Image (cartoon, rainbow over all chains, first blue to last red; front, top):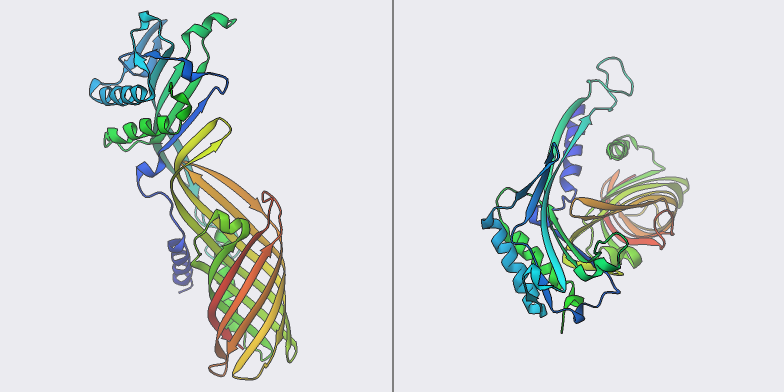
Length: 204
Length: 196
């Protein structure tokens, strides 16, 4: 009876506690930041690759890139082009001296964690007192997040850099829990949001 | 959290044993309304709360005792953008505020042996306050143990010999402390059982 009362109280109180996100898309966030000294409205053209890197493997000095399949990459490129065009930029080839370079990259990351549970309630299983009355046991779980990172750089700034590299002038990172439902609209929505919250990118 | 459950279990059990004539034990369901900084953080009322009071009458109409409680405020914010300097973050926020007051109380009962017994009380003590702002898979946690003053006005209705009904209104004012740089305050409307 004592255990029933205790378990009921715990369940009652735990049941009342607010639970937070219900769907994987509730975890979606979009982060953007930019170089405040950079004058975007003096730029007119940009270039970007036609494939999205998802992973890089280096084996005995050989570098292999893993690219996103076209059926997922195409909607991403289409959405980026749509937003860049709306801001007033023209897409050009890399050998046409673009004002900006736009590079998308996709990353997925799996985090493993374990937790252990024990019971410290007052009990009389092995003599009365506070303490564990069962050995703790461990559970292992994991979650996977996906990120789409888009950067804008000024290729002409490399000449002013002591290490001949261009600094990123805008970065967008969209992140959320991976559901394995292959819902590309979560990604395209995040691209729209990236540009929406970056009105300073406009050339107009 | 388990400690809190245990505390509440003990509190409920105490009701069963409070048979003395000069003891008052109240257990009530508590509805909270954030004010000031807490109200700005979470605008929604809290319907997750419990409060426990023990009062011992040192004179017929004056009682000393203690108060324990727990109020959880929660609000799910729609997707919104938050900008700091040159960075903007957009997403849904889940806001939580857990407050566990622990107060010593003094009570003045206007008509202790009547069917209707209005009373005034003042609580002084501390509270464990924890605020979480969840976004994506991360939480920003703020904690503090503010000094608390809690005025209270209530009415006990002595429905039967030892059991009655209780309604009271408390204003918990927690001064700035810990991670909180402004006061943490809220009203509670409490309805429950009064044992005497």
